[in-house]
Image 1 (cartoon, helix red, strand yellow):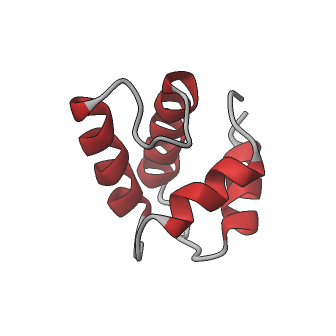
Image 2 (cartoon, helix red, strand yellow):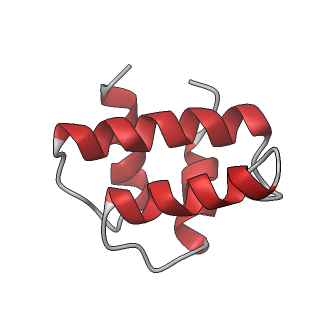
Image 3 (cartoon, helix red, strand yellow):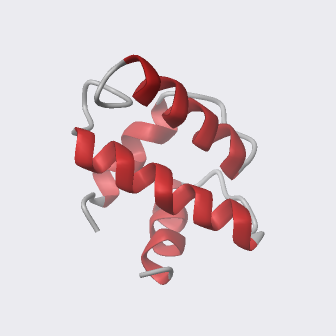
Length: 78
């Protein structure tokens, strides 16, 4: 993984997310404008997060509004 739990916390501070798909869309929009989704995330972190949040969405994992739990879910797919 290219990212840490603190990066997930950055993502969660950037929006009022209600699904993994919401986060995926935000990351896609950011990456389409720049090389990174957010100024606190590197390009590698942004791309890895996008891939991993897409995976959670495709797998139908239950969404959580807790960044620590989201990080554990993301770790579970690696």
